[in-house]
Image 1 (cartoon, rainbow, N blue to C red):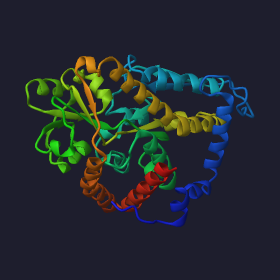
Image 2 (spheres, rainbow, N blue to C red; image 1 turned 180 degrees about the vertical axis):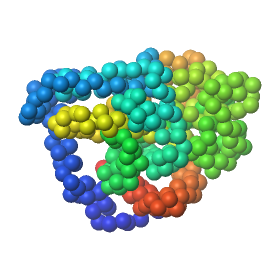
Image 3 (cartoon, rainbow, N blue to C red; image 1 turned 90 degrees about the vertical axis):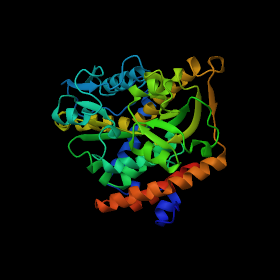
Length: 375
C-alpha cells in the first residue's frame, strides 16, 4: 500500500508537533514521566516525584482483574508490578488489590465488568468481542507492524492524534493500550517459503488471521485453541497460526515442531478503569496513574510477552526436542505484504462507511511505521 503524503507536520516529525499543541496533557505527561524516571518508578524510592500539594490520607481500593493465571510471567511483570508501583507512587492513597483470572469476569466480559464496577481496573482484549471496537482492529491488519515495539509507538501516536480511538471507550476511563505479540505459523512439517502455504489446511480462530491466510492461498479451518492439538494429531490440520503464548497455554508445541515466523495479526490490549472509581482519586494521583500507564504499561506488556515467549523457547522449542524456527526470505515477506494490501484497504473502507476516518488513519499509521523504522 502506498503511504502517501498527509501534511508536513506528520511527514517531518510523525505528528509530534500536533501532539505537543494539544490541551497540555502531553506536556504534563512528559514532565511527570521524567519525574517517574528520576524517582525510580521501576524499583527505587519515590522521593523525587512531585508531592501532592494537599495530601489526603484516604485510601482508595482498586479491584484489579488479572486475566491470566498467576503461573504466567505476566503475574509478576505486569500485574504485581502495576499494583506495587501505583501504591508506591501514590504513597498508599491508591491501593490496587489483585483478583485472579476467572474470579469476577472473563476475557469477553472484562469491559462490561469494569463499566459496572464489578472490577475497577482491567485489560480488555477487543479481539474477543469482534466489531465492538472497530478502530482498534487496525492493530490486527497483517503486514502493518514489523514488531511489538514499533506497533506500540505508532498506536500511542494514533490515539493522541485521532480522538475517535478513545471515544470507543467512553463508558470507562481509558488509560493505555498495547500491541501484543504477533501470530506465527506453527506446523507439523516445515514450511520454508510463502508459496508452500498455498493449499495447506491451517487452523486459526477466525477474524484477521483467517483473512490473512486466505490471502496467502491457504485452506483456513476455523477452530478454538482447545481443538488444535487433537486436530493436528489426527491430520485434520497441517498447522496453526497462533501467538507463542497460546502455544504454551495449550501445549501445542507437542504437536507442532516447525515454527515459521509469519509475524501477522498481533492483538491489542486496552487498559481501562471504572469511571466512578476514577473520579474518587485526587487529580494529582490521577496524573500519576495516567502517566505511568500511558508511557510504561506498553513497555511492561512487551516485557511480559517476551519473557513468556523466551521461557517457552528455552524450555521446549529446542533442537534436542526436534523443533526448528524458520525465517522466511525477505522477498517472500515482501510478496506477502502485497497480498495483504486489499485487506488493509477493506478495513479503511469499512471505517469510512461507519463515519470514521479510516483512510487517513491507515495512511498515518503506515507513515509512522516508516518514520520509526528509519529512526
